Image (cartoon, rainbow, N blue to C red; front, side):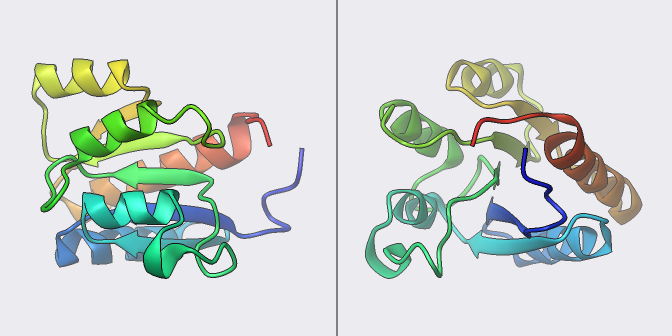
Length: 149
């Protein structure tokens, strides 16, 4: 297994809210895992990034994410539709998808797990709690779990 400390982890955040983007950026900056954060502001951009379309066609500037943090409630294409389109593409490389959203609807939880997510997390509004969650995600996905290359 490649030591994650040797290479920055690539994290893709699909989030339309600038405040939540900044919270995530700050929480990741305070973490102990070296990372490169790429932010897309809606589901359409997320799919373009993952399918290497348009401005995301160059893998050097848009590398495959080690972790994909996905909000459900976004403009253009919502997170649920993003998940459905990813599920319909088994040719894509392994992707760790964590839903990070304000929703706590049982229907969203069940549907997204059925669409292949690895974790569903309801965003806390408190920055301290949010930071703890982001750090726990980093620890779990980059230091504890062994993933295929």
